[in-house]
Image (cartoon, rainbow, N blue to C red; front, side):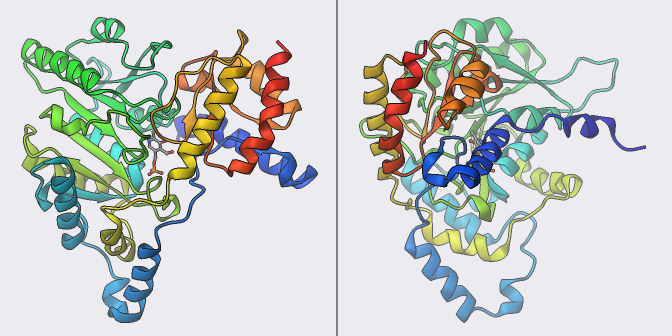
Amino acid sequence: MINQMYKEMTGKGSVIREFFTYATQRASEIGAENVYNYTIGNPSVPVPQEFTDYMIELLQTKNPVALHGYSPSLGIDSTRQAVADSLNRRFGMNYGKEHIFMTSGAAGAIAHAIRCVVTPKDSTEAFDEVITFAPYFPEYVPYIEGTGARITVIPADIDTFQINFDEFEKAMNPHVQAVLVNSPNNPSGIVYSTATIQKLADILTKKETEYGHEIYLISDEPYREIVFAGVDAPFISKLYDNSICCYSFSKSVSLPGERIGYVAVNPACKNAELIVPMCGQISRFTGHNCPPSIIQLAVEKVLDMTSDLSIYEKNKNILYTELTRMGYHIVEPGGTFYMFPRTPGVDANEFCWKAAKELNLILVPGDSFLCPEHFRISYCVTTDMVERSLPLFEKLIKMY
Ligand code: PLP
């Protein structure tokens, strides 16, 4: 008999992918220039030239057997050391290579980090819990529930999209083993301030004493480098000892297809020396182990740099200014390439699937991020497309 859980999941794919597929199909019918595809978070700027040049150098100069051989299961030593050095230099941390585990993107990093700190229970015991905050990346559900733990989502504070601390404190209980945060945030674009992270850290420290066990802070940071001018963006692991950072090169250096990221375990964390070797063991269960050797080596060249990200801030400024003028309510993003406006008082599904779609404006409804009266605009697109779409956004809001 086949596994019924996965069978049922096949009928419930990602809403973002569904809208993206629709936009692609519509573009083939009426021409790409007539479809305003704001669905997916695929970077629209090229990888830094240094990465491409180094890939070519590696291919031309390295022994091909070694270059294309298996990587050590925790990652290539020189890459792990280079990641640690870069984090220490930039954020005043104290990582060694023993704290770094190379992964397939942030997805691989989060799935490993969560498995390190939760334990599947049998049906007679209460489940371990991982708390996260709306609006949140919908893939957290399979990442967390695939470990045998349960996800608890704290409702959004829609006025600021910072953490809703009243609801968080109500939801805390001794079964919570980890809290998963994402800042800069997909879908809101909001960056958690130092004050927000400090307050979260203080509550977690207090609760650790009360419950008599660690509560790990898992920080999902694929957008860490995409922060706009003047925004306070703390390095989260600096503010809480029991923290595990999950990073990805997908967004800041435009490498989503290469599937590369890492787990960085705070050296001050309880069991810090065990977590990376445990990740190596977890890979044996998931069968999803070390990323390609050549990509690990090549990212060593881009650890302290990003793609030219300026178009994201430019697009944000145009959309935020113009949409606000038209009457949309938006909490101004501090980073990423997402924006999360309120719908004009209607259900997001009706707004996106009916009204916006009729104008070939393809937007993602907020219900899968647990905000049913918001919609996501993913503006990693050309500025030309942003400008051409403005009259349609105006037409859309006038329908209500
Ligand atoms: N976390 C968030 C918030 C994301 O937006 C994404 C991808 O869009 C991921 C994790 C997964 O990133 P990766 O492609 O590096 O696995």
